[in-house]
Amino acid sequence: MHDGIGHPGRDRTTPLAKERFWWPSMCKDIEAWCKDCPRCLRRKTQPAVAPLVTIKTTQPMELVCMDYLTNEPSAGGFENVLVITDHFTRFAQAIPIKNQTARTTAEALFTTFIGHYGFPERLHSDQGANFESKIIKELCQLAGVAKSRTSSYHPMGNGQTKRFNQTLLGMLGTLEADKKREWHKSLTHAYNSTTHQFNQI
Image (tube, rainbow, N blue to C red; front, side, top):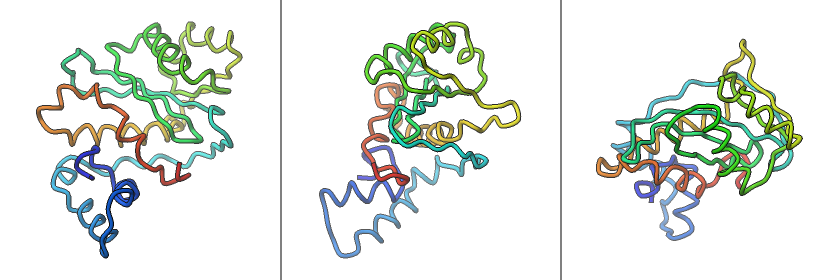
């Protein structure tokens, strides 16, 4: 179970295992396996701890955060991932794209996320030129979406998305060698099929 869904930790592996199996020392065995998994030990490192951010949300789509991460080029020519997360539910969408230009960012945001889920009340990002571009600002203004950004003195203010990036890279890093070139095909399925510890959604 742990090996087949991207090597998540104990808290995500255990609920999935309980849906299908049971044995007396189940929880203890899962914890030991996740802790000593050879592939996880080779790949995963402790992520940087983001400073405490007092951002509170009470419902889905109240605040949506976005960020970029870069991975090794895939067979399809993708090496950039636009990561979009709903702050309240922790639902995340990772969109493989070939560049990080403002236009590409806006098109991916609109067609892949907004086109399916609608406009959020507020859109949050770092101060990257692609996120602070005229086209993004105009899109937000036309839709009545508030736009916020991290401050220069607090670049980790987008901490939830940064933590998802670490989780996603960790899962991608544990893919079998013959599947790594196709990483863009399995970005967020394993992550979103597991329980989020914060709100048990």
